[in-house]
Image (tube, rainbow, N blue to C red; front, side, top):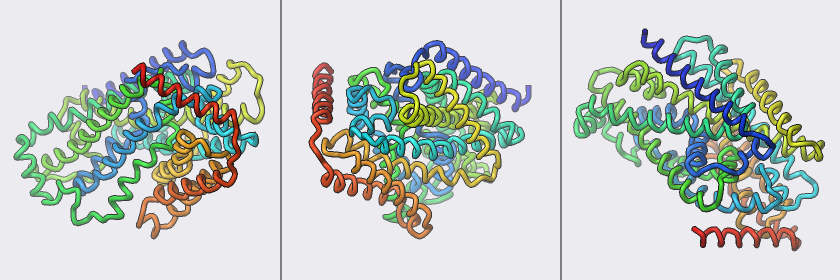
Length: 497
């Protein structure tokens, strides 16, 4: 068999595994709660790794190693910011969101939680939240499909559109039929594949570069500042902007929805340890891959055309073609895990937060599950159409979408969980202002070059939400009761722990 044949075999096995998991999840999905939230029955390991895999996407295996390879550890500040942000998200948001969403009318989506928590009779908060999720995630899903098309084009010489359709059909297939459970189980397996691939490359690679000492000498021969977090190219604003990526976690619907699905509050602590451990080791593996790549190519007097392919090149250089194929599957796993997570959240926004809230309120669960599957299909088709042009500018929206979600939802979620005086008008005002500021700031090259747009968007949302809530606050016994009940349940859970 040729090298390409071995690699393609690994990809086929991976794809079949995703389909089998989707079928298994389909057999376990009986109602809307199962389809949208897995029946709130996820274990800590599945919760942790599925959240991590949904979060990282191809950036972990291509973007970060490419940046470190080209510029050194000065590019690691985003990884540091994301790790701190993820830990805070698990610590501050996960336990309260798990309890509060169940206390507040068993909310199964972020918009429905905000609607129920703040008793928004106008439904505006729920609908606006649903629209924000629908718009951003449709573009996000499209960018993932573009990545999948380019993956097959560059790795196997497939036609771009063929590659896009392969990724779309398999990912949409298991998401459409298996719902949240399929997304979580496949993300768990994809997280494992990503983790093993990122750990193996630097561990095996260091033997090829002569051990730790010789490897470090080779890296410094290329750039004496390669190991410096504060290289001459670093600026205070640049470091703050990079670390500020961590703020985005509080408002990412496809990540925090995992907190709502875990079996109990007690398991969030174990899940946090697993998730942050996975994240630290995976990020370290990505950075290690880049550094090993620098040493290897310095020693062989060679270069690579595209730094973002360093993980692929090292995998193909160090391993048997079949193992290299599994490395390629890790990249595909990163892309597909994010697409599927975003699809299920977009589907829930369409069905639970718009269709169900505005039109059908007394239909059966079977009807809503079917509507959810139809929503997955419709969003996928639109996303594929948007991504049909390989040179589409949609990819430019990915960084903005992270900032947009973080600025729109982050402060709102934190205030809803920790401040009893937040009002529906305050939340809506802050959410819209945060999204608008992030968008306007991001569109200005001057402003975005100075500071990442999530920072001003997050701050403006927080300030306006607090001010408007203080002005519009009225005591509501039901809201007070739920807030106190949540605090009480959290205390009980901690005692049992």
